[in-house]
Image (tube, rainbow, N blue to C red; front, side, top):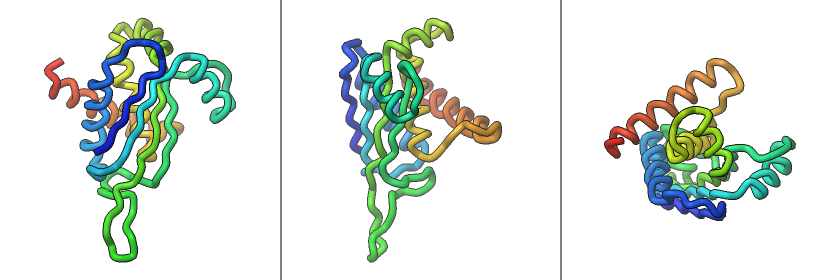
Length: 158
């Protein structure tokens, strides 16, 4: 799996942990092992710009997801060619804002690292087609998110 973590936020972040969590989530969702994912950490100004441009909403947000190929959980591939050979596909980009995550973490009473992990898992699930607009979708997505984060923290012993 190719997972690229780029920190352009100016805030120190455990990029290795973000990459490890991303791999854990993708493995847990049975995404093709050669799929590509990019996680970008940005400052509030950059996140505000993206939020306005793509969501038509003011101010910064915590996480945005930009899917590329149509990968779905349970499908080990983004598709197949005419010979039936699987194509790992480009999953897409998850953009996180550590400054917003830090504020949310304080309000929630946990660490910024925990908040960034939650947001990263959330963003990846969005890339995989999950949403939370309807109550049933919300239950499914947040249930999966909780399971993945719990298993990640158990794996790390935290």
